[in-house]
Structure formats: structure tokens, C-alpha cells
Length: 135
Image (cartoon, rainbow, N blue to C red; front, side, top):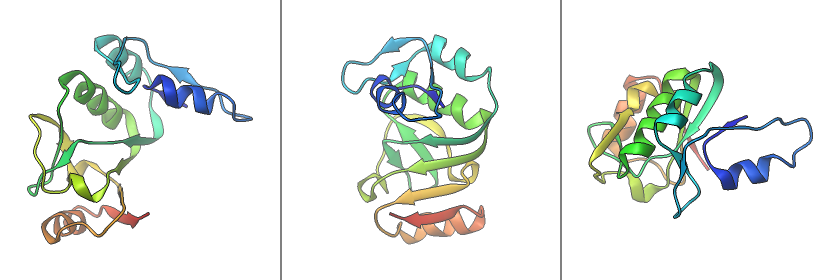
């Protein structure tokens, strides 16, 4: 497992049969995310089967957005290296805005959320063959 968060890495390291590789870079105090150019360079060395990302906002036009440029750069690199991209967001993220673009819904394969997405988002998912899973 490639990981860009010290808290997640700490949880995964105890699982039998799981080897955890953690990106280098700055550790953000608020949530343990590893951000910065070192993390981006580390991630770009790999081709992974699955990537799980989050976003601060999913705009009604399909933009995936964040507030932190450094985290957005890491998320973009993760999306570029994965064969299957999974976005996990709760319903409060839909229709919101943030200043930094991570990517677009069309780059996803799966959207996992806790409530049906708004009609515009569902339509974009349908157009781009993005599977929506309600958790």
C-alpha cells in the first residue's frame, strides 16, 4: 500500500500481509497528510491498481476541488498513476467550492458517498461511466 498519511499508514502497518510504503514530504499538522513535491515525486514512481482519494468539494460542473494546493498536487499525482480511481466524499461536499482543482469526475471510476449525489453530478457520473456506490 502506498500511503500519503501518517495516521493511515500507522493503521495499515499492523495488518498481516500488508506492506506499507509511505511518501516523504511535509506532514500537515491538522490531519497527518504528507504533502509537497517530495510526496508527488514518490507517488509518480509507481503504477497502482487502485487509488482512493478525497476532495473538499465536488462542484456541480464535475470539478474535484481542494483548499490546499500541496494536497491537490498529491491527489492529482495519485490519480495519474492509478488504473482505478475511487473518490470518497460525504454528501456535504456536493455543490461546494474550493480554490484548487484536483481533477474532474470523468477521471474517476468509482464514487463512494453516503447519499445519492445531486442530479447534475449523477448525470456526469452516468456520462463518464463512473460507478456510484452508496455507503
